[in-house]
Image (cartoon, rainbow, N blue to C red; front, side, top):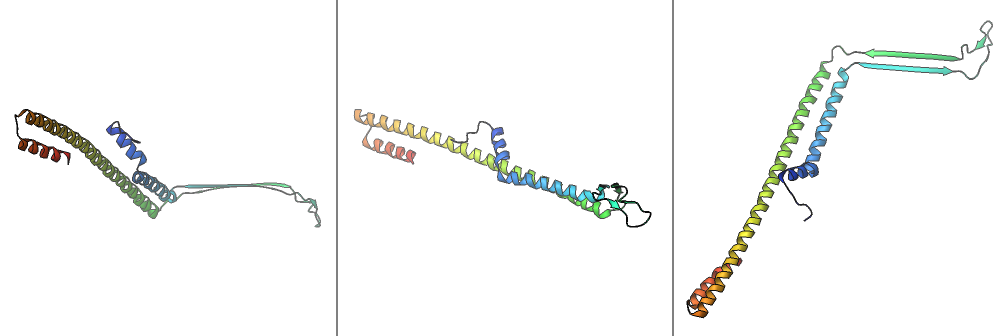
Length: 178
């Protein structure tokens, strides 16, 4: 067999790792976490910084009297820093709360999916064990019935039983085969 289970924990690990339903459920949890972070973003402070450098490569004398060389200076630095702090954003906090609740619902759905998969695996394992035990009992019963047929035929050959006993035991053996 390709997959032999050695323990219940092995079966659970395989279900959790290889089940498409579980993979989808885990992906849904990750998506809900991302939506929750996105919903929180508008309520957080934002810091924006910009910087720039301008270097003039073409220089020359000004056509205007008293101005001198253009550009002067030839290298210009600039920088800006801005901070935006939202003071009152009820819609952002409401969206964050809704996203948080959606995350909890997604986690519960994931647990329910796992519970259903584990129950299905348990049912399958019990079915397989029951079928194996039933096959074992059937083999044992057939073996006993065939031994009884052989014994009854020997008794009939020795005169200790009659043909009717042999036919009855052969009928019981044929029932054990089916």
